[in-house]
Image (cartoon, rainbow, N blue to C red; front, side, top):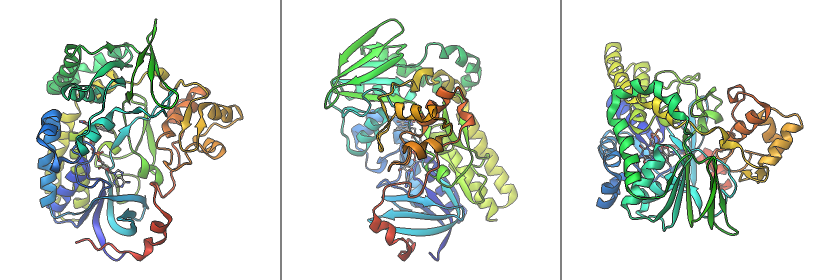
Length: 465
Ligand SMILES: Cc1cc2nc3c(=O)[nH]c(=O)nc-3n(C[C@H](O)[C@H](O)[C@H](O)COP(=O)(O)OP(=O)(O)OC[C@H]3O[C@@H](n4cnc5c(N)ncnc54)[C@H](O)[C@@H]3O)c2cc1C
């Protein structure tokens, strides 16, 4: 572990790639680690090998990523793909595993740029084969060109849901229904924020376009859905859904669910950063300054992992983190730093203009976690909502205490699937504000690795160029 990088970046999505390009541009010694086989992250997944029809289906939101990846490839930053980071520490040491072996490496700074994930929401039948996240369809399509067989039902709320529907329509996938859970009343709390959003009419028009395309497609589009569940014995057979006044059931082989996107806090929680609760989109996010700097010296969080703002803002946030590091390492003059920071921050601000409106418009429904006692919340340890409520009735009030008592969040996913549900269930049962609770402590290894990988960790060195 003798080589100390200026900056090690975890994640090669828009945030990590931009951070690497900026930092390398100032001559810093940069290493990027990503678990995917090639750079691009969630948004630009597999962009370097994308086929013509993939580019055509996904449009410029996707194809624009190629320029960033090409810049990154030319930047001089070292890159290791298929590298799973499983631990970081406040001294900026990182443990990762690649090709069946682990290594411990060290940096002067770490930028955590691991992005976001679809919000996992337990509901009746969510563990049945045939139920999956809507974003996974796009991810599979980008990686391998595979598309689902119909009939498909999509349920949930948010721009990504509409975007996935649009892609599936253009690919000719049979869609039985789209069940929109966006609360009808959201528009009233969003409207006061519209003037700010009008500064970026391009984004608003894009959203309107997606809705119009959905309506024109002739797909059964149900709005005001208050609840849905998946039914079947061994796999999904039907989906039941409710509106305020009625209930219906439809046949489905695949149910794609999307209830918004939340930051991935794997490392910010593991290392013990302070987290805040966003009351609008209802998620934990790490406390950071305008550069993504945290309460720990040398530890930065950039991109959607700091707060969900989307791909283009993620890239600007990555650059800002790199600029701050370059300033601290004295490789750019203060005036140069100020100039670059002002320009980048201005562009970021412009991108963020529509965000408060969109976040309010797609605020999750109140009853999102109003699940019955039999429903599994922690899939790894098979802990139900009833088990959690029983622990609360027994006097427990704190997520980590309930984790210890029930094992909810103690399984191999380390609470990624159940942590937020646990927070919400406790808050609802005790009539607390989630902001008054604390997120789960995550222990390393944050990802699954074999004992063999763990035992060899100290023997390997960072020998990348
Ligand atoms: C399922 C899904 C689909 C999405 N689809 C779209 C879309 O179609 N259009 C759109 O505009 N936005 C989409 N988004 C939002 C979009 O992902 C983000 O706005 C954007 O990609 C954020 O960029 P980022 O650099 O912060 O993170 P990401 O692009 O997510 O990049 C993070 C990278 O970190 C890597 N990583 C995570 N954990 C580890 C680890 N332990 N070790 C090593 N590497 C790790 C990941 O493999 C990933 O490559 C989607 C989000 C999700 C969750």
